[in-house]
Image (cartoon, rainbow, N blue to C red; front, side, top):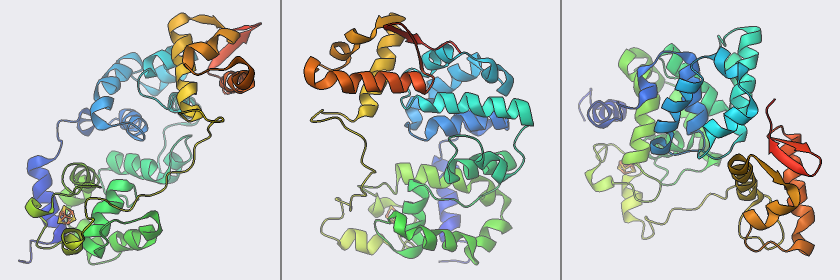
Length: 309
Ligand code: SF4
C-alpha cells in the first residue's frame, strides 16, 4: 500500500467513479431540501424515494409552504412512502423553523421532531459540506469491517466504530482532505449499499480487498453469506394477526384516503381479510382512535375522514 492508498483514499476513488452522484439531494445546498431527503430516506429505499422527493418539493418547496400544509394534503403527498408519522414530523419541524428560525447547529437539527442522531448529523454535515461522525447501518458495517475487522458489526460495536473515525490517524486524514470530508458520508452510504452489503459483500472484486481487515474472515467463514441477524425491536401485534399493527394503520389511512369518508365499523373487514367481528373489533377501534388522537384522522360521529387541521 503506497502512502496515498489508504482505506479511505481507495474508498473515495471508488466513490468518484461509481458513487450515485445523480441523486437529486446531492445537488442542493438548501437545508430544507436536504432535510426532506433525510426524513424520506430514514425508512425507505433510495430508488423509491426519488420520485416522492421531487413531487414533495414541488408541492411544498419551502419550510413556509410545508408549515401551512393541511394534514390531508400531507398524507396524500406521502402516500406510498410508509411510516406516515414522518410527514407530520416534517410539518412540525417546518412550523418550528418558521417560528424560531432555521437550525444553525447540530443540536438545533437534533432538536427537530423525528431526527435521530444519524439523520441530524447527516443533514448538518451536508449543509456544512463536511463529515460529521454518526452511525447508521452502512457506516457501522463499512467502518466496522474495513478498520476493525468485524465481519458483521452490531450496535454494541458502535462506540468502537465512532472512536475509530474520531481519532487520528483517520480523523486527521478526513480533516486533511476537503473532498474526503465533504463526500465521506455519501461514499459510505453508496459503498455499503452497492459493494460492502450486509449479506453478500463483493469481497473478491472489492477495491479495498487488500486493505480490509474483515475480508479474510468473511471469505473464510463457512456461513459468510448468512450474517448474524440483528433483532429488530418487536412491533406491537394483535393476537395471531399476520402483520404488526403498523401495517394495519397504514391500510386504514390508505382506505380513508381513497374513500374520503368511511364509517368506522366498516373499516375492519376492508383492511384485514381475517377480521373477526367478535375478536377484533376492540383492537380495530383502538387503531382508528389512535390515528384520530395522533392527528391523522378526524372523527365525526361514527365516521372518519383525513384530518384537515
Ligand atoms: S473486502 Fe469485503 S468486507 Fe472488506 S470492504 Fe470490501 S466488500 Fe467490504
